[in-house]
Length: 170
Image (cartoon, rainbow, N blue to C red):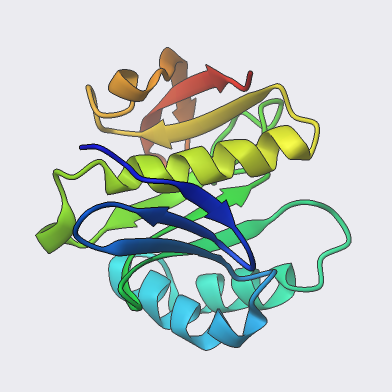
């Protein structure tokens, strides 16, 4: 896919020949808070709804660079989301920040739209002074193609286990 120009205004815009993709930072655009909460809750139904409501609501006036929550819009329709947080319910508290809750609507998968959110989170993490970015997942193969390296497993409070990936922010 050939991407057009990258423009920063209130949000970043990725322009290709077919559509305009926008990333909305909820912290920078709090008017999207309710839409973001609803979208995260719909996208991750196994997570208690109050979790996203509480996290996103309190992130808007956070004193530190984290957490951050993002929406990906295709011609003003929400098609994806992600977060940048200090811990993704995983035992490795020594590692942070984490990209979390990366989700692209099924209809839009296969177009590398997840990479748009990953790159935005990487930029925010680097601008906040971090040298690495982490994620936990059960997927094998997806994140590796974007430069993430598997570094081991981590354990969740509910007894689950996930693969941990790391990428250096250059």
